[in-house]
Image (cartoon, rainbow, N blue to C red):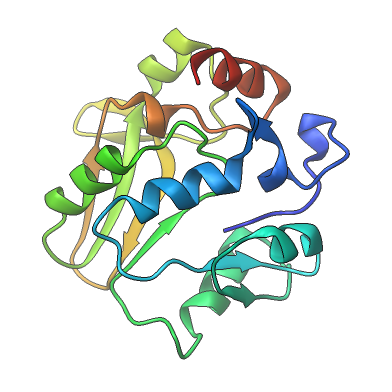
Length: 179
């Protein structure tokens, strides 16, 4: 999923095109997927991200730009997409193919929310935009999920590539230091 200009990043480029270690975040995510067992990779963009749509070297699914959830729902109705679907936010610049493969190896059936411990995010001083309790601890959505119907499950991974989700300038600075 690719968003538009990252106002929280105070950037003059669309958020997916913000560079970490000289490479746009979206390219880093696409590379992680390309090195994993994922068969087909699509970039989901909107009218808010025309430069990203023109930049990516994968097929594009254009949505209305009504927000992450609405755009994800729209993308899932595209005729090229069949469930189960691995969804990944474009702002996970430290994601690697090993992490993607580990998640896919852990998935059995249905939908899977991949979360990270909030304590780990706080240790790294990464922003926490939302969290929920799972098996007695506070976890945060990672930005990587499997959409596949019932049953629904949660997988918690203490994985730096899933923990560093770039939403604020401090997150970007950390990603750049760790890359």
